[in-house]
Amino acid sequence: MTYKTDKSKELFQKAQRCLVGGLSSSFHKAAWNEYPIYMDHGKGSKVYDVDGNSYIDYLNAFGPNLLGYVHPDLTAAVAKQLQKATLMAAPNADLVKLADKLVDIIPCADKVSAFMSSGSEANMHAIRVARAYTGKKKIVKIEGCYHGSMDEEKVSCDAERLEALGSRENPNKIKHIKGQKDPDDVIIAMFNDLDNIEHIFKTQGDDIACMILETIMANADPIYPKPGFLEGLRTLCDQYQVVLIFDEVITGFRLGLQGAQGYFGVTPDLATFGKAIGGGYPISCVAGREEVVSAATVASGTFAANALCVAAALATIEICQRPGFYENLERMSQKMVDGIQVICAKYGVKVNTKAIGGMWTMILGTDEDLVDYRDHYSKVDSKLYTKLVQGCMERGIRLNPWRGRNYMCAQSTDEDIAYTLQVLDELMAQAVGEK
Image 1 (cartoon, rainbow, N blue to C red):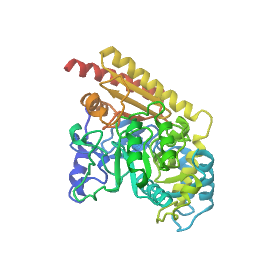
Image 2 (tube, rainbow, N blue to C red):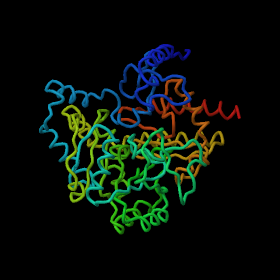
Image 3 (cartoon, rainbow, N blue to C red):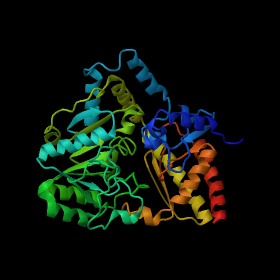
Image 4 (cartoon, rainbow, N blue to C red):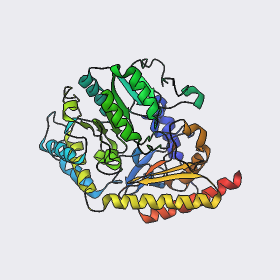
């Protein structure tokens, strides 16, 4: 059967007449795509486009759809709340339940500071809280980490080429649009480099309010922390009185209910959660040590802690707490990467894979762990990965189009994995044969 996406192409042409760039999010179309694929609906582990094509979905909306599409129990909880109202400019009883559950679940959470709608907002609020607590202005962020779209958050998230990053000792602060505010209060540090971070703290510690990072740098393939890195960071932040913020927007609920801090056994002062916390509904939060989170005023927002998303988050937690939930996710993730290892060995392709909870990774071009963002430019075979992504799409499999970070959902099946591995085997044979 020929793969056709004519209706998507037509819709994109229409969209460009009324929508800037024809998109509402830059995430919806990879740069190498002529047009985005317009989706009609999702069900279980699959999505279906406007042309009638179906796709086993490992993108899962970039992480939020932990439960898959139209999970019956989540849908029932949301439908029940829809009959009662969604937005009332007031808290409801379920909000208290949700905050109480998160305090029980999240290691760093003495209290929840705020509920919001996106990870960008949560990270912005966490930085504000850290500044209020310390009375300092500067923030340290890791080169390559993504924390949102606000001017101060979106600094040195990516670069067109390695040379643009500057030296490790004095990295460039890369802005991403014309007119972006100068990041005078942002200091760029290197992932997995405690010496680099200690030097920054020693020389500028009196002005630093916080250190914010993704514990697993999901914005770059991804990159995992070396043994001892997060522990060393915790020690340095204590020593120099810097608030340590874990951005758990991606890792929260994906690695387990306790997120990366539970998985790695390192507790930050503040943590931000989003994406999977609502099972596909827009809700995020900031949680942390009481003396820190209590330093700032309560956040404001029209849609903050709306009843619909609170109901979705409560239902998501209940489902995730069922026996075997995360064990099954990790079993499927491990099955996928084991199969990928076999395929790559068969064709002599170097690959680095990992499986943690509902997240699995496939980094082509190297069998070694990446150390920091710069390794993405020198070690990763992005061209081969892009070929596989394009080929998979045409055969009904949807992978992350930018990097090898993909997701299982609660409704993924062994049949999905078997078909995916079969297609990857065929595409790898074809790609290697073309070299």
